[in-house]
Length: 405
Image 1 (cartoon, rainbow, N blue to C red):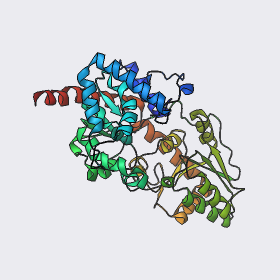
Image 2: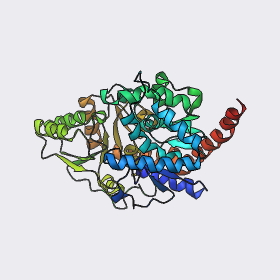
Image 3: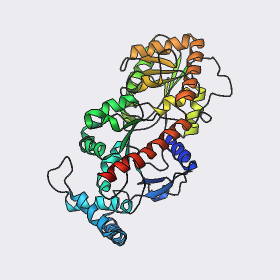
Image 4: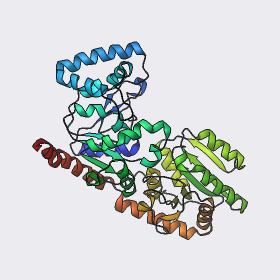
């Protein structure tokens, strides 16, 4: 996990800590960033996988001695679990890789948590061997798009480990119904699924205190990682269509990622250098400020859960134009909180944006509807109660069932 974590996770940890939950976050954060403080959470630093080999070996020896003093059985169990063939291999893990894995696992094996919560599916797969030594329930969050990642060659090993991760989980947290449906073919028992929606602080993400000017051009904003799943090329094609229709428009893209060169090339190919600006990665406060100055949020994704940035825009009273994929229709009803368009359809996106440009009253109504929806269904208080109920369930009901076997 990142350190400091994403803002929505920081809010979650802070609220849980206020209710008496002790939260420890494991992260491979570099030492230079480990000094950051997060209210409600303490950091357990995991060694980075690319540290020098001699340092890695020394760390394994030292941590093995520490764990053997605490519990020789845990050390033996962990080594056996690491050496066990993975779902994508037929032979035992070779010793060089075993050393690297032990370096990552040994410090965590000394912890004695009441509940382990993997906030991302890939982390659950990567740290599967630790389940053999942690004598506690495990929760796995399903936040991303399982289908999209599982079909990527670079995520093949992760995808093959998903069924085992779901099998060993006492519960699986899904941020929307759509992700639960997508995870089922990969081994998710729907009886384990808990729907707990995303949440944010509506006092932080709030409408601007000043009135937006109705001048030109229309200010469109997109926020998210620069990756193929966000469908930026379809949004850019829609902006080109608006320019050709002589609709005054500007698009601001906030975020960074592996597809930045491709997006830059697309902007140039479409001759949109004057209309489109890439702002890079910004802080939560900077994102909020830019949302408050915008006229509409464009979410042109081709696959999604429920994007936090879309909820943040809605909380700021911003109407959204969103592709109706994944869990987006669970948060945005067409013509109530925004305009929902088919995925991969630049013309439909352009038509929706033009409709908002021509009708300021529609922008206002949809913005107010989005804000009301966030206040109704995506509050931190509701999310905190749901997580507390989940943790109580896995430590009492599920834990009692396991003890009785």
